[in-house]
Length: 80
Length: 499
Image 1 (cartoon, chains in turn orange, yellow):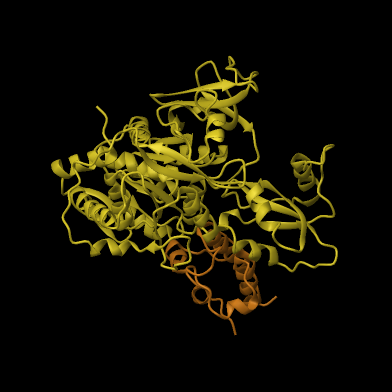
Image 2: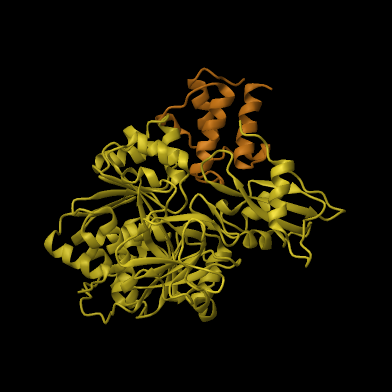
């Protein structure tokens, strides 16, 4: 599975979103299941899947689907 | 001599006017400022015709104006009915109808409720300078109605008088040995009994309350802890786990300046207790136990009683507990003689709003008969051994399986369904609900379909984490759902191993 597909799958699974919904850049403020537990679950899944360690500062910046892509980019994971 | 929380705020506004009372999300309030804003809110409400004993629903947004309206209502002798910020419309309308609420301070002005909603900023339209010192308030008057989930599907309103609120404040102040210069960070929702109790205790004492919007942004929480020089922290076990995970196991550094940490709303597992004791061996780690119906009744100081870690502690001053059998008779309890835990004392509710029959039933034993089975050891420590009903505690929030089942049964694809608690595989929430469903033979259910269906009806913490299709639900010989067998089916057939 490509990194991009992995990232999308994680987002869809943690927050019960469809692939179409990802195109609207879902954010913490609009996704129902994105509460503190959903947030920490997202972080745990991203860390496991991409073998990275997300800092506390990065955790607080991770507020949307696109911010997540930026964050992974800072860890050297880029999507085509 | 007894005082309402508001009378104490007035005293502190007179003696220490410039001391920080509340650091809300949208700014700080000194005691003088809090009193001024509460008076303004009271004046605004009085102008709108709100009078003594009127019920007003408040969306518990952690802003200055919420606190002002909360205390302003009490100053009028009116009754606060706090609601969760994310409460669904159906629940809010149920509460509005059940309380015959006079108005609703909504977090969003959507206008889709059974009564007109007001936004908090409207209180600033009031230009009077009333100072309600002569309001006819008595300690026995109802102050709050707090809605809570019980054994049936519908939420019930717990009636609390000013006397009960003051007693709760004393329970907390005594249990934690609160100092006047105490500063607490309390990220819990302000419609919940736990956070409300903390708020009242701190303002009663003249100490300082720092709020925070949950546990999503740990970095901002840390900044608030440090910038306000907090000496205390209050959270649920799930919140502590989130902090520990976010800090890579360094909760010791995160909470290093705390004189005490108060933990409540849900049971704390042994692993977390030991981790906290190891991380903070010189910090008072105080677990509180109670119910909305009898709050802050029992406390356990972990570091002081390492030999009693399985216990929930002992009753605080002015509270007592007893163990009763099926006939409501008090028994001499021991490890071999367990029974239902009853809490007695000054924070016991007066009853459920508009439900005298249920009130009488739960208070029949001379106190609040909880849903917990327990025993008391020879040293007076209380040990919980199980629950007498099926309510699921999801990270501190009580969830009735019946409510979730009722909501799902409105879906025409579902023939039958049953909800059971399972351990949260991420070890944060304690227990989470899963749902077994029997789908109509000619129907197909898509992935996430049922989850999305329920999201429109229920708060997120009530949504089952998994939906399992099953041919038939196990029933007992009288045709009643056998939840214990269903739990067995989960354990043997569906439960996956931990990672």
